[in-house]
Length: 458
Image 1: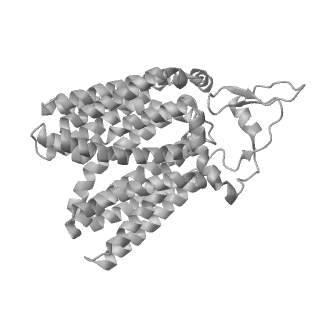
Image 2: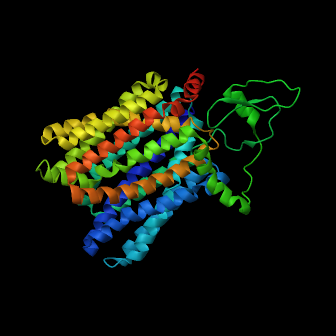
């Protein structure tokens, strides 16, 4: 593992995620206070999701042209620049900011932020391999959940104590620290580009991860280990070529084509979408409604449920991290067992009416949820070459944003018309459907995966 660059990557993600939470909380509070409009407040997260979905669709053009660390740096620098403009406008406008400008700046920041997730997840397999890959994914997941737990808990306190304007200043400081960390990240494959393979060289197939051989009549075959193959594939002094304009449409389609050509990628993404379709039930509005309508508790229990959920996710991530060696060779069973456990606990949560037991159920969700997420992410990263991975992850990010938007609308309708209990039961059913689909697709999901795990863990 390239520990130094991975540490910087982890640092920039932690600081950037914390800044996002603080600025969203402060801005939503400011918008609601100044406009007294719930609709205007909701525009902030909706604009973020919409801009990230567009960004994810266009990301392959950027990922094909520039190195991943450079993309992360430009994204972070651009967000900081737009954030500075936002602060300047809010201070100069006083109590009468132009909300069109505010929302446009939020959309611009979110558009740049849409590059970071596929770039980060594509960079991780370049910095870690074998057991180190799953360990790296676990560390990233624990970091994300810790920031969520601390961020949403402390951001409300900071806004109440400091006010929205000063909280935005704190967020600006975190963005600056994230930018410094980002500038220190190095890609071990940076500056390397494809060149013509010699006949007889055995290479990795991005779909099945099985070896393929470049041959000519009369030539022998040569197996190369991954480290030597990388040197064979890339030249040390070559640079990434410019992308011809005529290929832009082709580049935009590449990620989708790779997914369409791989049975395993299609199965993984389909399962992810089914599971995510019910994932929005943990959005604040739904947990608040559950606390009030089912548990008959005050708004404080909304915070308790959120805290228990993220605490369980952190604990689950730490357990997964400790069991990497065991789980690395059993990624598919770990993913299916994790999803099944999460689905059953969600159904139990829906049917339970005892407040203390609710917190325990949510806490227990952490381990199966993290087993599922980390295993699925690792399988995704191992299902395609490191150079095609950014294209696939960009397509996946677009599908994820679209699915989540659909989920919010669908779950909102179910909550209003069928009740909050049926909402969580429906979410549990969706997760179990994903599990059943995974069981029937296990042949595609496990195709050549065990061989790759055995090779990468040596």
